Image (cartoon, one colour):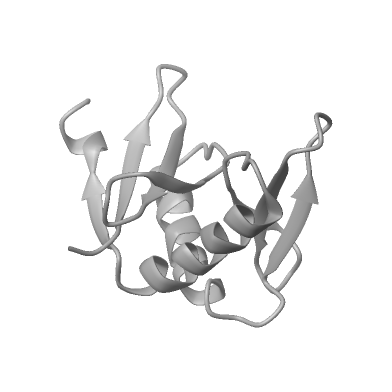
Length: 114
């Protein structure tokens, strides 16, 4: 079983996506986009940049828990992880994105939610 990009449209009319690992756990969440095409471009950017050296930036939340962001070549953040309990689990999350993003299937939930 492979990973999935799950594209959704929020109640505010904006689009966003999550990258899920093969077990269904969300491993990366996008920003909100005004158009569906922009969200699809974001998914393509995650696919391209997940394997790029230096694309992941480890961060620390205000409460001290680690997380990471994935950046495009222009430095724009294209996705953010959940908060992790340890740096080791954060590193595993980055590896999971590297593994799943390039071949993840697209589940377009905007087709069923209007």
